[in-house]
Each structure stands twice: as C-alpha cells, then as structure tokens.
Length: 308
Image (cartoon, rainbow, N blue to C red):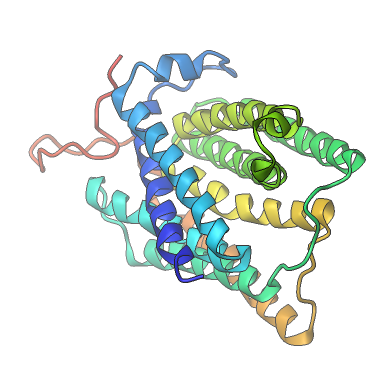
C-alpha cells in the first residue's frame, strides 16, 4: 500500500501539468461551435502535445497507484491536482493568486479527500451486467449532451460568458472522465486473461471511443476560458461521478454511519464553499487581460503564444 502514495502524487503532478500545457496550447482556439477537428489543429502545437504526453504518464501512474492501493486511498491524493494547478498559475500568471483563492482550492481538495475517505467505498464485483452499462452510458451521454448544448448556447460576448462556458464544459468533461474511469475498472479486470480476451471484450473499444470523446470535451473546455473556471469541474466531478458509477455498476458499498455521514456533509460544505469562492476570483474573469509591457518579460500563462 505504501507504493500507492508516490504513484498517486506523481499522477496528480502529471495531470496538473497536462491541464496547464493543454490550456496554453488551446487558448485562443475556441471555435464558434463544437469543432470535431479541434484535436487535429491542436496537435500541431508542441505545448499541447506535451500536455497529452503528461496526461498519458499521469494515467499510467494512476493505474499503478490503484494496483498497489485502494480507491479510498488513491483518490484523495489525486484531488491534490487542483492545488498543483494553482501552483503553476502562481508561477506563470501575471496576476497574483490571492490568499482566498488558495484557500478555496485547498477547501475543494480537502473536501473531496475527506468525502472519499469518509465514504470508504469497498466490496463490489469485478464485472457489471450489460443492461446496467447501457443505462449508465445512456444517462452519461444525455447529461453530457445537455451540458454541451447549454455551453454552446453561450456566446463569447464577455469574459464572464467565456468563464461560464469553460466551467460548464469542465463539469461535463469531469462527468465523462468519471464514466471513462468506470470503463477502465471493467477493462482492468481482463488484463490478466491475455490479449485474446482483452480484444474480444467490448470494454477496450468503449474505452478508446469514450476516451477520445472526453479528450475532445476537455480541449473545448480548456480553449473556452480561464483554467481556473474549468479545472474544478475536472477535479471534483471526475471522482464523484466515478464513485457513483462504482456503486451503481459494481455494487460498491459506502459507509453510511452517523459519523461517516457527518464527515461527508462537512466535506460537501467545503467543496461547495470552495467552488463559490473561486467563482468570484479575479482568476476567472481576468485571464484575458494583458499586463503592461513594462512589467516582467517572462510570458505568463495568459500570454504564451500559440504556435500553429
């Protein structure tokens, strides 16, 4: 179990690096509608490709962490991703990260960690029945489609609209990632059965398709507006959706005693409070602003040029 901790920390750093690099590569690339070719255009930008490489490395570290440790240990550590993202923003941004923004990010990370720790998911089965997968897939697609329609109805007439669009797209991306995590769990149960069993099972193909769709959603979220707007959706809704799917699909059990419920309520309050506080941050509405030319010459997260 001790091996899971460094792998989970490495996964957090890698996914945070991926978000920042993809944002740097995708900013100023938001199309007027949903662009199916956005990934191909972004693939011409080295900084975006670096983000994808970091995402793949983070995925490998997460798999290793889950191999050595339980979900209840690994997921709270992965929630530190949000703090690492804010660390990058503090270094690269021309705008100072205020104390309350740090506190909001910390509250969300701690809240998510406490929630998963208090719930302590356990038990469950290796495989979920096919009809449950159909229900889970249909609900996920419906929720993501509704969120996508709402996001695309917003026009970039102001920085506030761009932030709202990024936040909505970040939320639906987090939900999609949660579904992908559930598919990964199904897929991982076949890894010891050999190549024939792996490629004859539906999970590998759904994983490829759902993973590609989630990457496309994430790219739109990162292109739409400030990283501080989309990142909470990535960080919070991914493990929450995965946990709910774990209960629905794999019959995982969560703690429901008085003490556990009290901790879960406290954790939800921390998450909601952090989200509300961060929604009023200058980082949300001010990313598009450029700083005066006589200030520092190091490019900020807002000002790094996009290569094409």
